Image 1 (cartoon, helix red, strand yellow):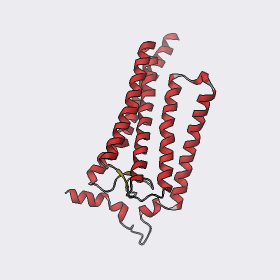
Image 2 (cartoon, helix red, strand yellow; image 1 turned 90 degrees about the horizontal axis):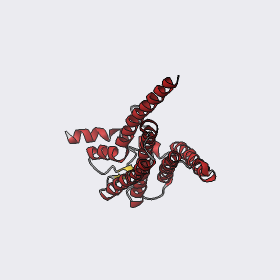
Image 3 (cartoon, rainbow, N blue to C red; image 1 turned 90 degrees about the vertical axis):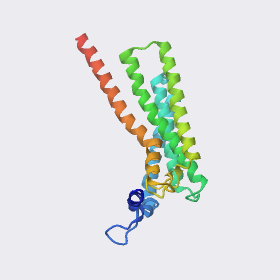
Image 4 (cartoon, rainbow, N blue to C red; image 1 turned 60 degrees about the vertical axis):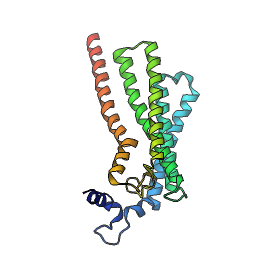
Length: 226
């Protein structure tokens, strides 16, 4: 059964299409079109994050806790974009340490972005709905820092040490290194969730919940005033 799933899991990357002798996914991912489009998207992301850094540095009045969190999110997005560009155009061997490092840096960058996005929504909920004190706000922010940087760092180190990340053979990425192809299919799926997808799904759900709670609270306050 394991061999059956593994064979079908990798089939999309290795099998020719029904159209005949067409390029497989690996050739497309490493092709100039995909590289150009992905590099353009990553470059736009870098430009956007640099604009956020610049405005935060130029105008001290904007340096509130919520905007600091946006800067932290931007740090992660900036590193992800850079790591993807390096992966797309890198000259290191696919199975080399350089590929593992690029994948680990990508993991280390993307997970804090999810954490800080969730924490930003939680922060708004605590400030607007719960009206926590300044002292509690400081404690919460310290907890945010410990978990938003510590947990991703731990996951990135573990994924690198256990060779969970590395050469993806364009099976689960589009031209850059991420989850290593040289392992069982279920391990690949597990590492996909641990290094990003699980946190992404949790972020979608959690942010939606806090959005509804904050919006409901604000609406109730408006109706009280009216």
